Image 1: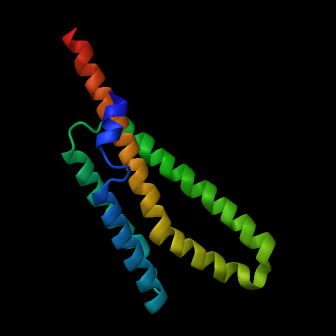
Image 2 (image 1 turned 90 degrees about the horizontal axis):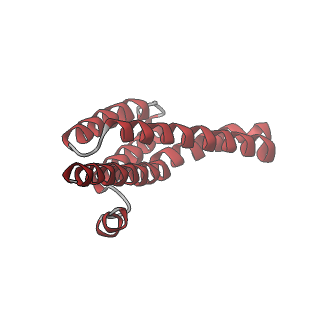
Length: 140
């Protein structure tokens, strides 16, 4: 069942990817142009949009949403830690802070929405598969 669902659905959720890239690119652009931290506010509104999108999908269960959120937090923590170590050791104090900020903004603006969309879709497929299996077991 899961293999059939994986074949018929794309790897990325297009809605989540579109919102994430729009917020990310807009946030990075505004941060570089005006030197204000608007990205956090934009990200907050995108999370509200994600939750409304999730709520409208009746087959995407809460358990899988929490797994999705937990995996995102883990990825952010690990990648930020690795980036901090690499920037601190390889580039030193002079360029480390500036390059770290640029890397984080680019990561948050472009790479993170792609990971976000992929993980959302992965846990969505898992949730749908679990629901289908439950329906099949109830019929028996």
